[in-house]
Length: 247
Image 1 (cartoon, one colour):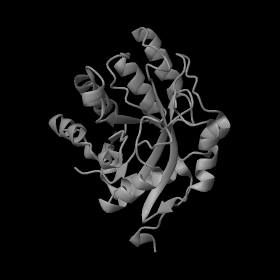
Image 2 (cartoon, rainbow, N blue to C red):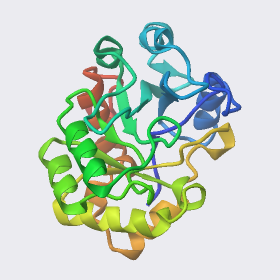
Image 3 (cartoon, rainbow, N blue to C red):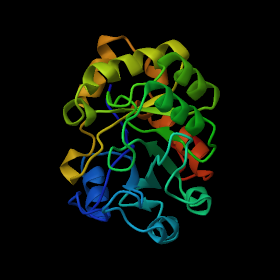
Image 4 (tube, rainbow, N blue to C red):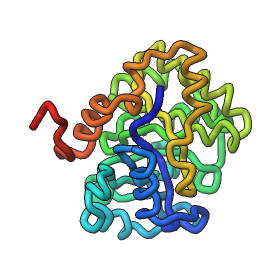
């Protein structure tokens, strides 16, 4: 398996990433990556851009650059255990690709019951497309209950390769998440969570883990061009690009 879409990356719009949006696009083009999701940290992150950044993003940045389809999105912060996010409905509605994540700088880990309640609330939010790095071992939750809710609400679960090294205990927890997704038939994506352009597409540890557990490739959205294009159209509400068979 190889990925055709980077579904989670950051830019110097936040101060702890180090490449511009266009540098990310140019690198995706260089390595032959046809799709790139720009998912900047939302405003509650200490150095995240203002909400206006997200409202302007789809108006200012073209949906195609250097042959790369650019999905204009966000990584929204979950702010409480009732599903509150740090971007307004107005901003979220404009975006192509919305990830929702727990971050310790925005909400401290609590109990398994609280984490479960929070994910169940996010599952009910129609403006959230992707569940961000829920393999973070600091936020344990009732795996079967939550994955069932994700499946029922069409959520995509992210297997975040960056978590394997950056978030303690996440390697084994990500494996448990993937196994639960396999049991419940939940669609997933593998992402790098890149904070510098050379990290884009670097998801080897995640793909290796999926091979080890014989994860169904048809559930991995960003390892197949047509499969990812279909979900990109679903989430963006636009045609984006024509395939050869559609011309």
